[in-house]
Image (tube, rainbow, N blue to C red; front, side):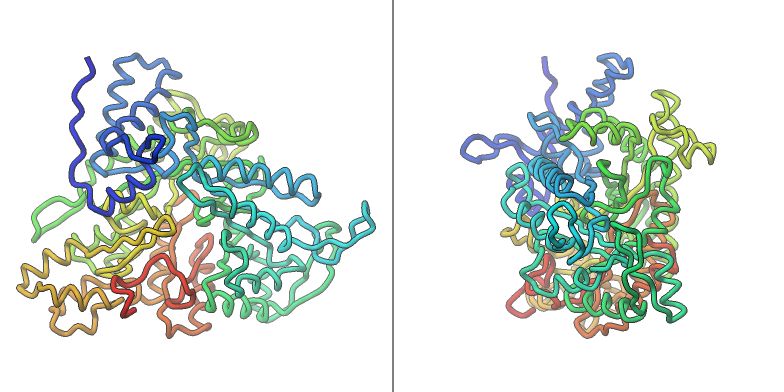
Length: 582
């Protein structure tokens, strides 16, 4: 007899809305026929089936499935969206992040286009480096014509994305990267200043150490035709850098990825050079590689009294160990969209365990986000996750063997026998943080009350529950206060709110660009892959602010950076709760 399942409780109204719209199994009419409890059970039991490949008994598989279920149903950990959507169903495509190669031939370009379509249809996002494509107006010997350049082919990929709905639940997302020394770099930098261009792409300039040296020395640098390897022009590094900063100030794009920083930490350099990332840029990957991500909800790991809160590191260690096992099992249960993807993904077995709810953790610990103490806590927590994730991967290596491409890897040279080539990544956790009712990733609060637009047409309004609790305790809570908070990106000018509350509930708009970047850098120290973090800037920020953020990120060892200035786009995912007054 099947045991009775204890129902999941404590899900917010926003979480239930997202689950019903996007995650739960539906009937032919689109009506959900699955509860959140059944969803978590479906996923847990499916992923635990991987244990059978390693001689686990049926009893042991049931124990693992139960541990996975407790992990998710308690909202302590959630895997990336495709795993929640597809595990235990016909599609069974469980990864969110893919990188596909784009080589300099029409055949390669359109083969990749087909592969992109298959991945988007299965619920994944794709990243591409277009740096190998010959520049605009270059010679095409086979037709005696001239090339149209990388940006023109990106428009083809963008249109393909436009017509494919991911598994009926997600709109496709892409990352397009072009090296800074490509002859078409200026066109690439400027293309999204037209808001109608490449609407399904995030863009990042692939910045090299050579370019940054030229910038520091106020020199020019070479533009290289990738077809011939020859220099075809030169530009002043300062002019190009200023143009990047101006475009990012204008509408948030392009971001930057630091290619040589990524290469220096590539765990498998013997397999090739990393040139591209997933759509949110936190996951650098080799061609055809995929990665499955998952995040621990740090806000659930505060214990002690309200007067003396502390982090429950013992429970966090247990959670990390179980989460690593879960993600490693996902690799075996995944139904890959292409054989090339399966081969290299199983060869490297990269996983990306990260965190969410970090801002909520700080609030519960009475620590303002824009403080040195917040940086200290961030480093301590991520170091702990990293160390215990590596220890869990080492245990799995003893049980199951190291990843097949271990020989020749950087890990072999360091004497580290791990099951997974990477173990940590800090992802944005857009919708899974809504399910968990916590702040996304390592971001500060966007607002004490704010609205998120998800699934293109669903607007979810949130009012921070801890702020409500503390406002009630201070005797200031009222509907009028809620209305005033709802029209404010920051509460710092609301003088009737006690200074201690205003200090604790700082928002993204109160945090300086430098503090944003330093927080990203702290987490990058303990992330094998990258860190998804938006450097939010006020509408009054200058282009110099953007440039300084890019420079600081490079100096501190970040693998990339994205900035966003409030109001620089007509449509943005997050806004203050009362849009009438935003």
